[in-house]
Structures are given as structure tokens and as C-alpha cells.
Length: 233
Image: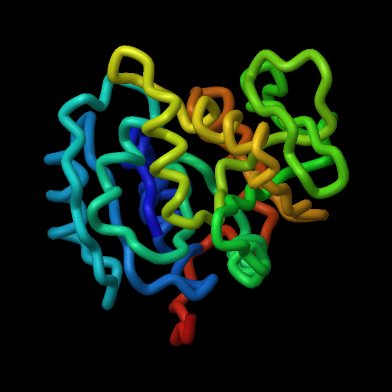
């Protein structure tokens, strides 16, 4: 599993967002983690060393260009990942059952599958969300400023390593976002969507989003981290 860090140490119900993400991913069956560090990377490592989350295999990768877009962060892990992987953000909360369902999707050799939410009107802060246009199960366009869309990007991707090649091809002046690379994949019909159905998720990147997450988590049984089951993936 790969993710990038930003608001990773923001507290949600007394635990950093990163701890919620690790716990949820472990419950979904993930045992090995590659974490790309940028802003406050030293603080994240210090937190982890002082408050270990159990028997978790973590590889740390430094991104000196963390002020650039998130595609650059993903590319920092290219040399470590040579098999299908789950790509997530450290400031997105999710249901472990959703991550588990995404991991079970059949993944073609050159494909990426994005968890998408068709419940567009129920998503907090729609203006900030990354929009997706689907035709069947194929994603044909993605971006924050799409005028025509029928789903939202949940920040959870099941990827083949070919993703790194598309990110490199999308580079302009040494910078690219995930959406830039995935937009090229969409043009080549190798980018698919997986509808998360009733699954709940949230991008926690503003104080208002944090408040909303606190309220929504308080009534959901998956809010508090659980002891992870053994994974066989």
C-alpha cells in the first residue's frame, strides 16, 4: 500500500488521521506499507516510532519536492513497487469494508481502478471534490473542475505499476498530479471505476471537513481502530 502525507497527524477522535488510515487498511487486509514523507516527515516518523501501531511493515520514502503535485509524491515510490498496490491519501478516511471490496476487484495488466462515489449530492464540500465522468465502468475524464460528471473520486486506487509510466508521461516542467496521469489513462481506456455503493469516506483537508468527520465518525461502528485480522493477499 502506498500513500502520501500532508495532514497525517491531525487528530480525529484522539488519534492521528494516519493511525485511522493504517488501522483501516490493515483491517482490509494490507500488511505492507510504503509511506511517502514530505511536509513534517520527521514528525510523522517520530510519532510512529513512539506509538507503534502493531506488527506493520513500513518502508519510508522521502519526497524533497513535496510542494509539487501529488503525482510527484507517488513517483517517489516507483523503485519499491513492482506488483499491484492500493494507493491512498493519508488524510482520507474510509470504511475498511470498502477498501477490502476494492482489493478484490479483477485488475487488468495495464489498469487502474478508482473507488468512485455516485452519491454526489451527499458528499461534504462538493466544490473541493475531484469529479469523475463515467461511461459504464470506464472513467473517461477526471478533475476538480469538470462541468459534466456523474461520480466523485474517493482517493482510493487499486493500481498496477504501469501507473508510474503514465505519471512520467504527464510530467510538465518536473510536475504532475495523479489526475494528470490518470486522465491520459482514461484516454487509453485503461482507467476504471468501482462504485463504493453505500460506503462512507471523506477527504479531511480543512477545519470544516474535520468537524464533519468527527460528527460522522461518532455514529459509525468503524470509527475506532480495531485489531487487524491476518491478511492473506
